[in-house]
Length: 198
Ligand code: GAR
Image (tube, rainbow, N blue to C red; front, side, top):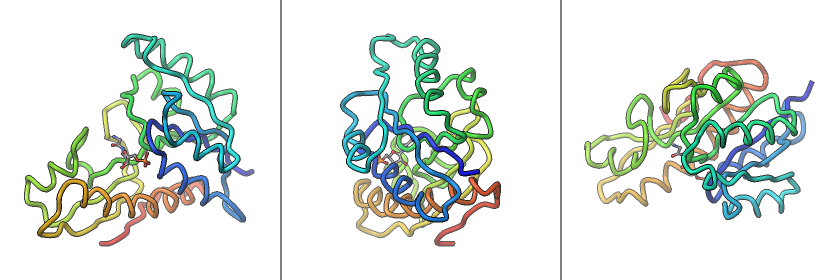
């Protein structure tokens, strides 16, 4: 049975586009919904242009009540009946209650070689640390932030004149390869980590 995939975004949605575009032909999954936490997420227009159903739940009226926001979010995601939820630049921290509803079925991409640099400003932190390599990770979402079983990593070299922006662009290019590769395996029931650039 073809798996249904909901993709959650907050911003430009370049990872979302690479995921949606990968799910064609004999791929074991299809994208069923692109959901954002703001009407203004740039990725929503890109998703519509790809023929996707889109929706958003603005987190701001909930004034920091994450559980209340997530209750509405969860109901709206359920309407699309997804088997898998992919966080793709979804910048809201999720509560344990929400995560537990999707545990084992929710993936996230993070722009660092986890367990290094959980949280924000990962590229600047890798540069500050003088790392020779940086990269991105796709992992199963568990209640702990940017934690959970690693399903794939892509590694890039850090170059001498890198700025956080230049390094971020090099990593993002790999994100667009890594996330579709991991999702395909995951949808096939294979959790062997994908490795790119090692
Ligand atoms: C990506 O680099 C993704 O790894 C990062 O946000 C960017 C979203 O770009 N995610 C996180 O930092 C999550 N903590 P996109 O909207 O173009 O896919």
